[in-house]
Amino acid sequence: MPPPSVTEIKSRLKGYRFGDLAARDVNALLTNFADLKAADKLQPYVHHTGTTEQLLEVIGTIPVVVKGVTYNIPIGIWLGLDHPHKSPTVFVKPTYDMCIQQTPFVDQNGKVYLPFLAEWKHNSSDLTSLVQIMCATFADKCPVYAKPPPGRAPPQHAHSQPSSYPPPPMGGYPGYGPPPLTGFPPNPGYASGYSGGYGQPPYPASSMPSYPTGAYRPPGMPVPTPPVGNTGPGSYNYGSYQPTASVGPSPFPGTNIYGSVQSSGPRVSEEDERRHFEEQEKVKRDSLVSAVEDKIRRQLTQALETSQDEMESLIKAQDALKEGSRKLNSMLEEMEQKQREADAAIELLRTKNGELESVLDVLKSQPEQLNIDEAVTGTNKLYNQILELYAEENAIDDTIYYLGESLRKGIIPLDVFLKHVRELSRQQFMARATIMKARSVAKLPIH
Image 1 (cartoon, one colour):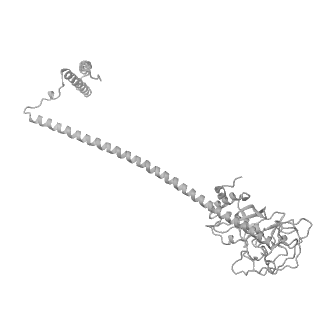
Image 2 (tube, rainbow, N blue to C red; image 1 turned 90 degrees about the vertical axis):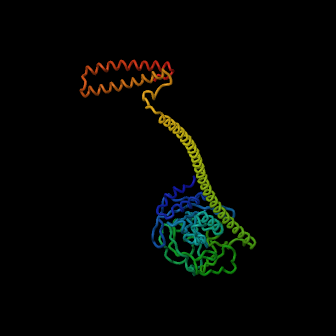
Image 3 (cartoon, one colour; image 1 turned 180 degrees about the vertical axis):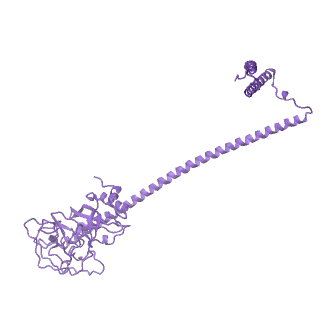
């Protein structure tokens, strides 16, 4: 099933100040880790101050490779309202058959502390890189182990004493208020088990442990000294709290509940210990290299998509400019054609004007007065006949019109009007018939 889209995730982020950036970050995480899911709606999150906020939680499992075996570690990631401008809060969430193992990077309540979270920068940090670093870190120090079978008593220790170092800054826990400072529990692994395992609550009311050597510490916290004779990887000094050898169940991936090598069984040579340490470092280095490669690949892909979008926009603008240039050239050609036609018309007008002036000069030079009836004549007798008949027809039209006006004004009686109109109509009919016959003989259009 594909992960939800950026738009779908953004619709769940009600109240987030940078919803678009947060949705993109979550979508990239779910794309790279299929076993992680984003909650369908915001969940209540109680801070250590007692305030509650509605936040989005990403839950599921992440693959952790320990000595060639892949374990699915359940986690929960809470995104603050300012994500990604502020780092998220991460918890290891063991199932009913698991217990939390305290490590330099995970406290007894399951909260994760990493330098990557402490140095979070919104422009260079993202959830995908965080989970990849967690996979590499948990491969070296697994944060959970198998719960002992029913009927077996949890291991007892010689003494229980609070840590000599101040606890790290406390964060909120989902669904619980701030834990009171009641000292270090006798056995962190069994004290943090879920209900059903020795009658303990899901998250005990106890103080948070100090950071062992190699873990992220707040400024000013002293560095504990590792115990003499145990300097191998995963060995840490927990202050005055010295656990005895465990008689309980085997840890989840193969270590005891305190993260160090079990004291029972055959001793591991320094060469094997060094080889194991180098393998863990190689896994961690390969994971970090993979995280960097994935981030660079995503950035290059994003830059390439942006460049392609810009290129498509520039190509569309270029096509629009070419189309505009073509239209402008067409308009220029049309304007040049109109200019040539106007120049030819001006030249013709000048020619006709010269002809009219020469005719006027000829008319002015004649001494006798011009006869209007002879001013307009045809080129032959047939054309003259057509011209005279046409003039007669129009004269009859004018005469009938004025006879009607005289009748309307009462100047002539009706019988006189009818008499003259009948006679003029007969003449007009004969004139029109003659015109049609003459035009037909002259091979002119009848109408």
